[in-house]
Image 1 (cartoon, rainbow, N blue to C red):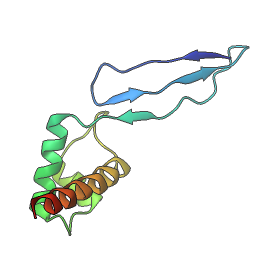
Image 2: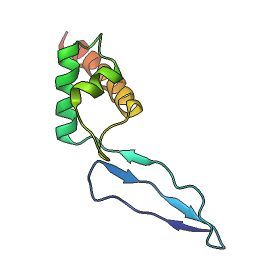
Image 3: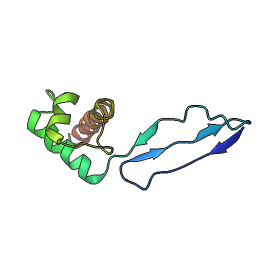
Image 4: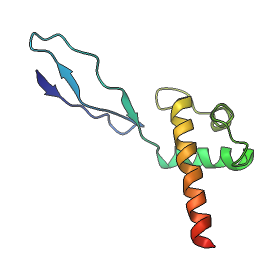
Length: 97
């Protein structure tokens, strides 16, 4: 097998390494990694702040972010980002106290 790697131009996603078989048959490529741009994160924060951190749910955040197309975060991307964001806010509040 030979290793093939490619990276997107920065429009919000990157493709991880994929593998090509010896006879040229391609095996399924890895899923693309979602990259949160500053603008997407700003929209995420605005949506979370308007819903309240405790009441924020991925579907509602997605609707408030109003982003469509190939660079839009999936429900799973938002869910993961929300989890990390909540942990960050907890850490900040502990350090401030």
